Length: 238
Image (cartoon, rainbow, N blue to C red):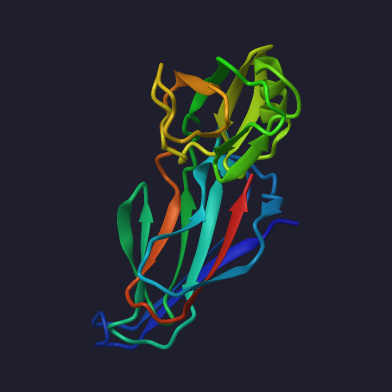
């Protein structure tokens, strides 16, 4: 059974128009151009903010499809105040402000970006089992001897923002989990993002494979004040 969304607009005479206004519309949320009901949702959620930083509600990478019949519901749960609002942006372009009690329901075109990839080759001397590298906040400990052993350790490690696979026996391939991870490893240098801890002469030499291109239309909110404020949201997607 399809989810139905409705909107009712009413106004007495002289409020907005010379006659009373009464408008009511509703529609079933379906996949693009058809009668098949949208079957997936993020679930009703609340985001509490505590600063005037920009917060990402939905990443386009996670919901991109060919047809994109996505719909988004947002509501500012706070008390009405001219000083308290959330600025809603898509592709970092402001859509508008939601003041206390305001809500919005709109379509969303989610498109993929291009995640960054790069190779990382342990070179020179990796001979001590205690040799380490630090990348993406994670410490990788060499479990054997030589560059191939270091690659094995890099591949076996879990990273918060990257995945790592074996490019060849002495080279690892890192792929960003999100196209919005834009810090780029520079080609042909010992990467600043890799910290090598070793008594020997081991280094990590990197080469860019794919430059990152951020997904252009993440949905973000920016609160107007630093207090604790809550926005309610729900995404319907194919």
